[in-house]
Image (tube, rainbow over the protein chains, first blue to last red):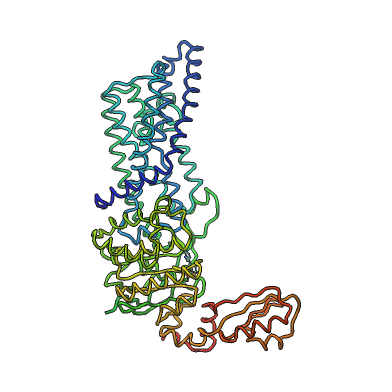
Length: 269
Length: 329
Ligand SMILES: Nc1ncnc2c1ncn2[C@@H]1O[C@H](COP(=O)(O)OP(=O)(O)OP(=O)(O)O)[C@@H](O)[C@H]1O
Ligand SMILES: [Mg+2]
């Protein structure tokens, strides 16, 4: 286990590293306005043409617009590239450092990710607040409780998402350069994590199954909390299942890591 | 006191034979064929605390593999090894805190930030007390003369400057044993000099035990009394450098490109011809005869001249050929 002072040092150092790219990130947020406007016009047109769209799709117009606006923002707050990095490190033998130093690879990168997401959040705060104000007619204003539960669910989803992609990256120990497998897996996950469209548009069977899979908790679940589409009961159950998945993936990752490292040690660095 | 004790250490890499493509990858999960690559064979040696030992060998001889086993990165196929009383590949924290591995071709520093930030992280990782940290850092920064570079982002440093920072990062926690794998690779003479000087200082002042690999004869000659020569994974020689390299310190190689063919006898009058590929000729000349040799070259149709140190490979070849070695002692 890493000491608190090590964690703090990694966190603050990563914040500084992120600050180097601050301008890039903020300009990136600026461009979010384009897809957001697009979604507003698109869904307004859909709901205008089909007066009944609301009941058919299961969401009111503001809910639908908010859903897509939030997927764009949440992807910045949750999305990771750790699988690519890890795979690269395994192939290049760049794990040496973590075997020679008393430093946990998972702990190091998890802390860096937390710092990265924290700085993204601070950069996103102002543009997001402005957006909410400007488009307050078109999007859902959540209740305080829902906003707080959304924040909690999102924190959990940052952890879960990181662990899922970390596990994916660890496959490199067995597959070597696993670009195709990873691309296939990420494409598959993106279909059922709610980042492309609300899962409620899929057949009921898939929705039911998805409730017990980890993936919908990455985007779909938190966003539904925000737009008020979940009940207190489903929120409680969802948060519980999500937590269980975090524990499962944590254990899985630990096992993969120590097995993988043994293999790495036997096959070569 | 023996710091490193290696007995019959052997490493055979298992290299998966695999076809490209997703389907083949999935298949390989269930049945996988391997090829064995013999990198280190039955190596044994002991190193006393405070020694600097040079590990010599041509490309692919197994030097890096050896260092990786000694630092705990790789499991050996067989054999035992004790470093400061620890088995390296168990990777105990106390072991990790008393060694360092520095590789000339790898970067371990925070890329966009000044090296000082990476040092601060190492301070936490290794639990270095404030006082020790500042003392050690200041001392090393002074020897390597990099004080003004501490605030420059690593990505803006030259190769030599970055390597100096890597070395500082490696020595910051005052390791007792340090593995240096080609620390001077690709560096200019001034940087090589500075790093050599640093290594010597650390060894004499702090009694750090060091194993060093390098393809530059000068590094080895300046730093190592003792060398271990490996060839194809086996130990060929273990002993004093002076026994193998005495005749090499005073000679240089002159490589010339000729415009047209010249008689062998003419070339031989300038120096010993050690390599000839039609118009490319390599001559071996004693250091003090270099000026005369250059003068003589003036009368030949020479298009290009290059003077260099004798490469280590040639030292090894010659050592082998002259039967100076005691195979496996
Ligand atoms: N991860 C690996 N998997 C399979 N074979 C490897 C691996 N790493 C090294 N080898 C092989 O083992 C042998 C020894 O390699 P090693 O890197 O130890 O040599 P070296 O003495 O450090 O060479 P160099 O001077 O080029 O750095 C080589 O034949 C190399 O191809
Ligand atoms: Mg090597």
